[in-house]
Image (cartoon, rainbow, N blue to C red; front, top):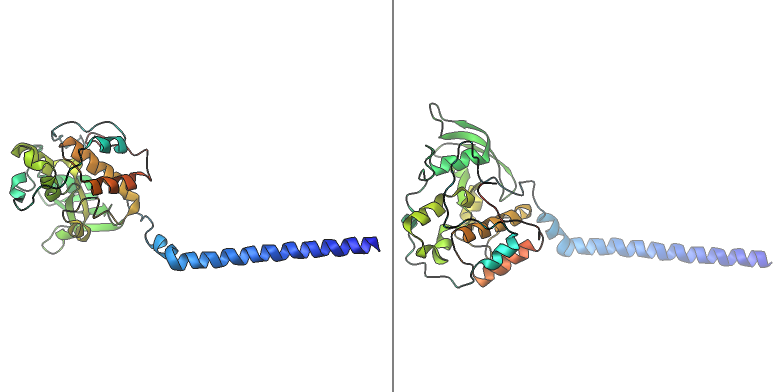
Length: 266
């Protein structure tokens, strides 16, 4: 009889354990469903795309370096950010694109204008127009801002699909120190490969003159490189950041504390 009672108690215990396990599984499933329909679906939708997590800067085989105001510090992006002055914006009503020189000059004197230099650097399978070693006619872009592949084809209706973005927008630079630079230094800033990336045209238009506090690439996997590159440009040209901009940059870099500054010769 004691054996029967022990078996009965053992069965009851196993039954309770099974019910507890079932309840835990059901609760976990319900929690997962609740997470998805509250924040989860947005996290999935905003997951990093398939685009690159960094972008090229310099190809010494055919590009020549542009001289910045001072070298980019060899440091972590977080530490370099701490060296940038924090100030408010200067006035913008006197901004003029011409203050940065004629657009797409051949500043490095390699025989090709800056726009074509960057297209050649960033596109794969680049082809040139007949009889030219500079004028890029077509190519494939592994686009960094939206994380999609884009085919570039030169033409009045198609060229704008790929635009050359100033990582630190010239309008932003003008309000944060560029007014104190010489005309030659501003010309270098506008044509420095460190500050230029071929990107999706629509994303570039949406960014406009925004800083990191008001715009970041939709491709989250590229944000660390993007912010580090902005910091590097601002350090190289003695530009400052606003407090909101610095806070936004630090939030991005919290996810990649080992991120280094970006230098043109790397």
